[in-house]
Length: 444
Image (cartoon, rainbow, N blue to C red; front, side, top):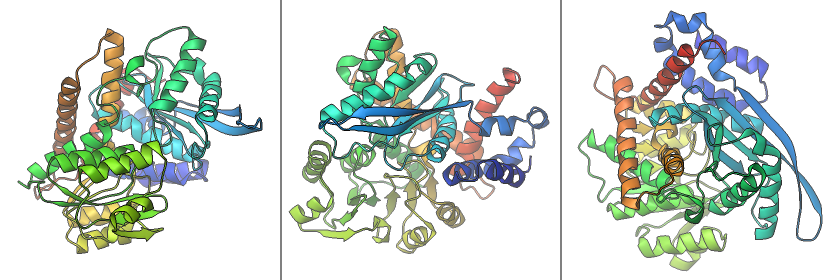
């Protein structure tokens, strides 16, 4: 395989899907050498079969607002690869959702799920519906209409959706409720459900906690203690909130958080009381992060991201391509020693290359933020066994999974000079498991 030729061919076939092409390019350029050590892969055209999704469902979603007006949105589900288990991946409700973004997410999800060691394939879905400003009843009607179109194509052994941006426990519960009514079964087809419906403890916290657990494993390789380290976090949603919670618990000093309007910089650090305020502001009142700056009298920068602030560790936890090459250079100039991604593909290719060239500790999202889907897998197990584990049990299993992912990254990413290329390590480890499963199942 010549990665550039494969990428050029995909660009020709899918010219308007930049996010998808970016995700494929990042993986293919790092696995090329390993792939070419297996001529049987090339003989069966495995790489093209792995890049292109098994199937994509697209459909119209019609719903009625509280005033009686009728609206339509587009809905999608990308079932990318199920070689190692049922399709598994979140559903995103956001005005930016396009087939390109969902294809990139499903592609990434395939390797992320492979890294968890759990039997899960890769998928992703969503809609360009924006839940902001909608009433509870409007969101319920939309979720029910969405599942009306999708329910025949999902199931506990087929495709198990979860939450993502714009989709939390409330939305998952609405969708699962409708699914149960239509399918006449109660089998845990959605994960991220409320505890009363079979959800798992620690699931809301898992992506943020898991990201910190992975960061700790990286820091151990350099004998660095996280206590007292200054951390810049982007985002203020679920992932960012629980990343900050765990960092505070471990004694780190978090100085930034953000939303789509701008970021706050609190040189005194965000403590437990301040984080509680952010959680209430964001989860209950759907407010803006600017209100934190007004309450606590700290710096707020409109329309910007926090990467210009001095920090030891950066943890981008908002959305894709939020950290570019210039941001990466600024972080390094300010003494940043580690970057661990809570979001999916938050660093641009230029930023990634800058981090790799500097040989700092850099963890790509498919490894560092795999804690969320790992705990979703644990939720599937609990549902299948008709039992529930304690928070301590789930947290312990999550720590074990993140440690295992780190070990795989080290195994495949260790360089001759002793440094670890976590991008290559994660991509090769995730790829090899899926590739071997696809080869064993024949040409499908």
